[in-house]
Figure 1 (cartoon, rainbow, N blue to C red):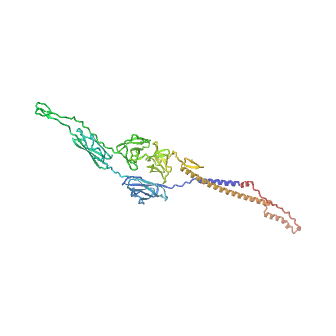
Figure 2: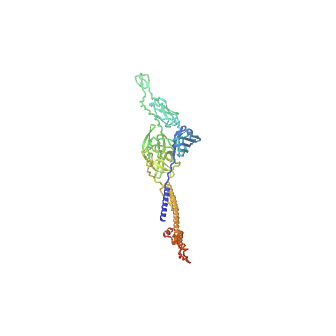
Figure 3: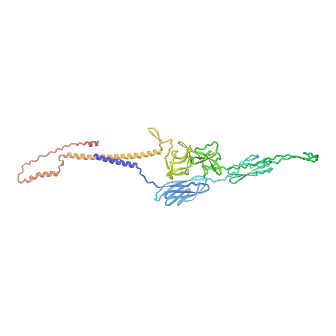
Length: 594
């Protein structure tokens, strides 16, 4: 019985081990195929016709891609849509691939008005050569439409003066005729004329070789669009001084009167000649270097830094040559970022702005708060290798458009990877948690020519963690909600597995106890039968018949030769004492019952 019970226990342990093994082992299923839809992001001008390229990357056999767009910004012209078609502001692109590989489409639009608009990829149906649907990472196209450039028609002067001399009346941009007087010794004047628009041109003539009397000096302003405006200055040069007496007296006297005397006196006044001044060259205004802000506002770059301005941390003073002019700039010591200083206007504060040398676009250094300080978001560097599982895209964060890294295979990502500069001027990658709206340090390690992989991350301390209540007391931990969620799922799964194991164990124990009880009952029944049978339990019917035959045979043989006794002496019967008594249960069985 003990052996039977031990065998049952061993079977139960093996069953429990198998259950736990199945519960703790997660089967791996074969991952479904995937593909990525990417779009080009053109920058165009109003009225321009441009093309948006679409590419489906993956083992694609048939691809159906649907997009929509804002018809107030874009007008569809044509495209390589395969079997697709345009319908209103929706475009359906459909192609079959002869083999299995990438599929490309193209769409041509006309830009209608300035601004930024998006071509959204809202639906996809893409299958591989086996007819299985692929997991699709959709994309979109951000189209930047700039307003058409309009040349300025400002042909006014902002200031006008001559030297020597004073204009009459005083200068006013709307007054085009002036007068001035100079001495007889002045043969030229220097004209200082500054255009109100930096892109206008100023020409001066008639200010040299002045004659005695009135001279006309002309100042002509030619606007950027070619329109002209003429200012005239009438300069009056004084005549030369003179006087004298001619006369003669008889007697040879020389005098100032004529009286019949032979003689004469010639007198007169004479002025010493003045030194002629060389006119100063006409001042030519230097045009401003204009840059464009994200809202399409254009501001001029300051040619000199204010005396009280402080360079941002991590930057050093430098200079940049633009259109033949040398501009003061601030250059980051490590990242190579260039910042220029703008005087600002009503909607844009004065200060340093990040400067893109290729597009002449600027972006404000807007800091965003994090748990340990502030960060200034910066566009991703061009030399950064995008890590596997992420895609670079343009999104709004911190009130401005920035290029970010977005995880693939998710429509609503819970985090982004951004490039930012801390308060000490150090550049680095940061992970932005969408739910908690917090930043933490994020690092990558470059392994030769391989893509960037995640390295050890020094996480920034978080101000809040997972909070729960225990016995009426609030307990705050440093765990994130995601970690607690994973932990709770794991604990729940383990509890379910253990519960199932306990139920199976209880059922097996009940069955084993029942089997043991039945075995004991069979043994007890056999023992009772032995007690009832007594000492003759081994004699059967055949033995009784044989004994009777052996005793009766001599008597039958002698029946004819001798007289049978009148009374045959029979052997006394054996009395079988059957005593019913209740069998005592063995001690071992009593222990099992207990």
